[in-house]
Length: 278
Image (cartoon, rainbow, N blue to C red; front, side, top):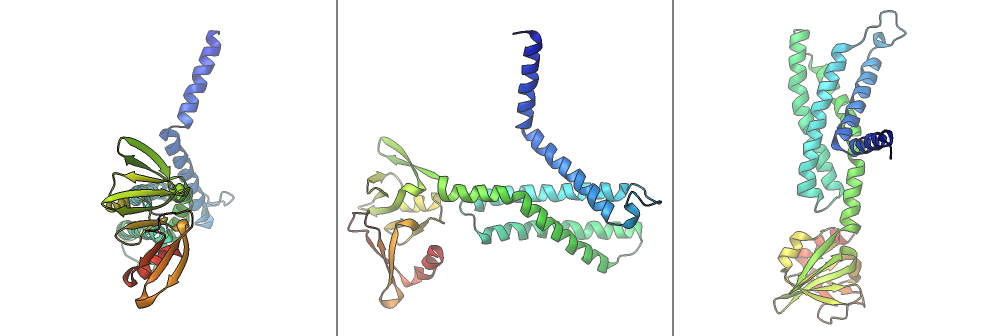
């Protein structure tokens, strides 16, 4: 291989590494931010259209939009990381997404109001709260749309992962086995030993307690029915209303254990169970 070919291969390798690196990821965000700032500041006022005789580049607005958008991006980034670690890693649902968006927009509001009050005092010498409020509402709407679009794919991937692709490592004495959530029907405790029942009826004893499992597994799919059992949503075959506001849960026939094929949900857990199941 010639030196020229080696150089081309090296350049190609470096370029591929750059495209897959976090540097390129942030470079993409920077390009989007610059384009967004250019568009917003040019459509904000008729004087900023290039075909206008009095056109001048809106440098102040451009720089302010860049700076403010950067701060918004930093707020959204760290708030998403916090929610991903504390909430989205366990469950992705509409309530947690709303909490993420509301808290992010709340932080933006806290940043926006004093910044615009300061700018109004410095530039105009007076504070016009009407324009600050209108500007805030427009800013929040734009941020809501952009942040929603920006993290939509991440949220979808987290949701898909939590439902389908997640797995748990089961320690069973000297053996270690990995099971996906889809292959687990339930966990149940008997004589202080916790067992995993798979969809094919196979039972594996584990070194976990039910409390430990409850902390590990995804609560979109699993529900702690009582002190003895955690069930998978797909393992539920039938739900019956019985006396004193209780529910009787019948599991599917592939679960051969007579002690767990019929489960009672107390009236105190009935609402939580129905919310989870529906």
